[in-house]
Amino acid sequence: MISTSVTRLLGIDLPIIQGGMSWASSCSALPLAVSRAGGLGVVAVGPMRLPDLTRTLDEMEAGTDRPWAVNLPLYRRGADEVIDLLLRRRPPILIASQGGTQRYLDRFRDVGTTCLHVVAGTEHAHKAATAGVDGLVVVGAEAGGHPPPAMVTTQVLVRAVVTEIPDIPVIASGGVADGAGLAAMLALGAGAAQLGTRFLASHEATVHPNYKAAVLAANVDGTRTVGHGLGLTRALANEFTARMTELEESNADLDVRRKAFQAATLRDAALHGHVDWGKAEAGQSAGLIHSVLPAAEIIEQIVTEYDAACARLHPTR
Image (cartoon, rainbow, N blue to C red; front, top):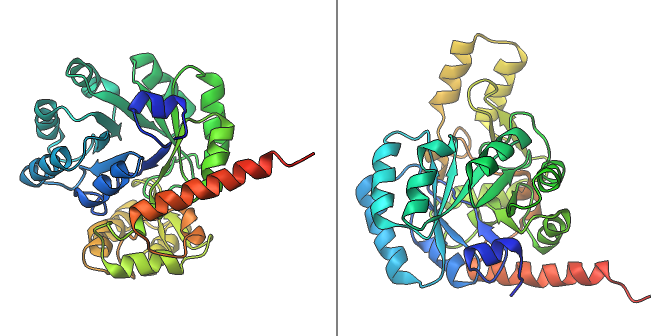
């Protein structure tokens, strides 16, 4: 066990949070494996239909007595219906993103759900903390998917948040793929690290093999941020990101850029393996990942690396 403010808040053994990744963890397989191994498994509700979500919640409840979470992007279509379903099911932990706390916080706290809120800047962190969330997930520029528009790095943003709001548990997200990264985030004052791309390259992640292979093939400079003004996205460099970069650098009309941006989807890459033209979302930590492993083995490896990193910080004098 590694005891921190976050592990004590969530009742988990290790300060390792699996990022809620649409399609990759929109199921029970990956979240169950992570929670059983001592971390926090997270069901990505974003693309799920209500019957699929209901079945997955059944599987999570039957599959483990350890804590687990659901990640709900509040902007998704039908979010109110999803909220109603989750309120009836009372998940242990809710991680909400892409919206304000007033939409969900009081109702979920009334049913006993621990509520974490995703933020990408100090202003939003202060607002969420003042509203009364139980903890924050602080996302830096290295993160895959939707990094902060201001592109502040995880190291700087996490340090700013824990300095300005010292009494709230913080989970650092972005750029972490191993135990050394976990140790670094704890050294900054976070109570846990959220890893998305590392668990994307796991056996249990339900994405196409082409997607996992593309993550392994990427270098640390192998992602691009595109979609400025449309919903900033970090994804693996491919034909889609090259086309978007070309349009953005040439100051193409917004409607032209929007059409190109919306023509590619994460679903194309995750389910169909179209990693050339799909939105193959991944963080810069893809360049640190060199193998696809079972989730439990990934966690074991992270803990071993964490112990080694801590030992290096205390050399024999």
